[in-house]
Length: 226
Ligand code: SF4
Ligand code: SF4
Image (cartoon, rainbow, N blue to C red; front, side, top):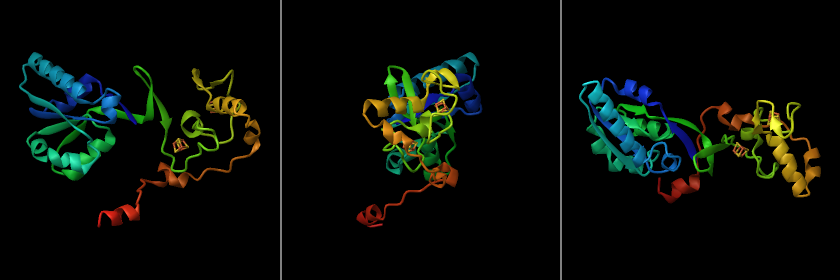
């Protein structure tokens, strides 16, 4: 899932200060799960904004509502007329949601209400951890399911580096060394000898370093008759 955090309230108030009729649009998928931008957060933000404007003696009409996914045209289409009725939309979707809204409705003013951070999962209540950088050429089969691209600060493929100490990374004594974890897991599974194989340089052209990526699946396009 995408992990995001709501922007600081003051920053949101500042972004919206010149608008009176405001729609706060939540997203019902990833940002709902990470409690940054679902219906509950959209309503809380609408209430906070209303109180702020009252204190400032500035008028505001604000409504909060949520669609299933802001990153798919089909869901945007269902509320297109409603969206068009606001001066501005504060999107609580991730950066993909904001851009999908703008691409589908170019005339719409859309502002980001959350900071999109990473792809990961909830480790425990209130804690979300990053686990994938979308590198375009997954190596988890080599590293037994632990991602060195994301979890190693240097994204190295033949670790650990000289900064690994006591199982921790040199960037922070609280951060596990990814290669220490990989080593431990290899040992536990009786596959330690596999670590002797030198991994070749990674092809970063299929990651974001090669520019924005597009996935095309011809058989799906054909299935849809496009
Ligand atoms: S190797 Fe690449 S695709 Fe696989 S989990 Fe890591 S970043 Fe994601
Ligand atoms: S200490 Fe471990 S996680 Fe940190 S940069 Fe070195 S190999 Fe990567």
